[in-house]
Length: 355
Image (cartoon, rainbow, N blue to C red; front, side, top):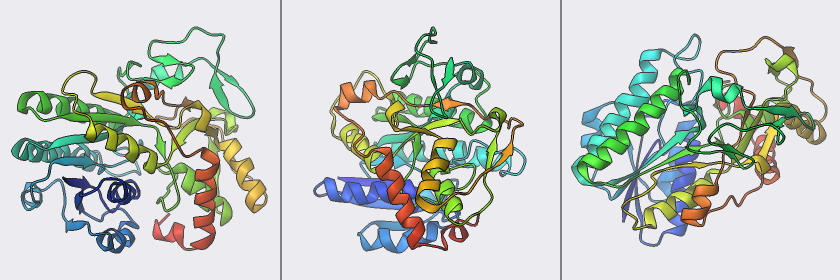
C-alpha cells in the first residue's frame, strides 16, 4: 500500500508518517510540503531518513500535484490551521482561501484521477460560534465545564461535542473553509467512487509542535512560560478559564489506520475525535501546571473578548469508539510532560517557530 501525506513536514504530518511506518507492514509513504510553516524544514531530514519519498511542492499548484506518483490513500494534513487566519494580523483572506480550498480542490482531483481514498483532517471550528458560546457552562476548579443540570443542545452530551452539533454561520473564515472542504470531499467521493473519511479533530498537541498564540496553544504556553515570555488571559473577564481538550497525533494516527483498514463502503463518513472532557484543561489550569514545574510566571490580564474566541470545546469520541474500536491512549499529563521535556531540551524552540 502506498499513502500520500500532505503537509508531511508539519508536526501532525511527520508524526503520522512515523506511526504508519511503525504500525503498517509493507506501507510506502509519499509526502509533500511547501515548507512555508516556520520550523517545518527541521522535520525534512527526519522524515526522509524514515524512507518517506519527499517532494517539495505546493498543493495550490496543480503542476506540483501532477508530479506526484499514484497512491492508494491520501491523508490531507496540510492547511492554514489558525482560527484567526484571514483576519487582520493573521494572514490574508485570499491566502486562507487558496490554502484551505484551492489546495483541497487539487487534492480531490488527484484522488479522482488515481481512485485514491481520502482521509481529510478537519476541525472543531466548523461548529457555529454562537452555538458554542451558548453551551451551558459552570466554573469548576478554575475552568469552564458543561453544566450537567442544564438542558443540552442537539449534538452535545456529557461526553462532548459530536458531529450533529450546529454548523450554522458564523463559524470563522477558517471554520467556513474547513466545512466547505468537507462538503466537497464527500461530493467528490460520491461522484467519483472513492472512499472518504473526515475527522473533526480537537486540539492536537505534543512534543515538537510549533506552537503559536493562535495555534498549538499547549506547546506555545509551556515554552513561553519556561522562557518567561509575556502571556495573556484574553477575554472571559481575564480568568483564563477557557478550556480545550487535547490529544496526541499518534492517537489520531491509530484512528486513521483503522479507517484505512475498514472495508465499509457506506454509512457514516464524518467523525469527531479529541481528548474529550477527561483530557481537557483551561489556560488557568495549564498555568498552574507550569508554575509547579518551572516556577511562578503570572499571565497579564486582557479582559476584552477577541473575535472568534469561545469558552469551551471538548470532542465526543463515541462514534469512533463504536465503529473503529478506537480510544485515546495518551493522557494529557503525559502529553504535557513530553512538551515540557522537549522545551527544556530545545531552548531555541520559540525562535524556530518565529514567535
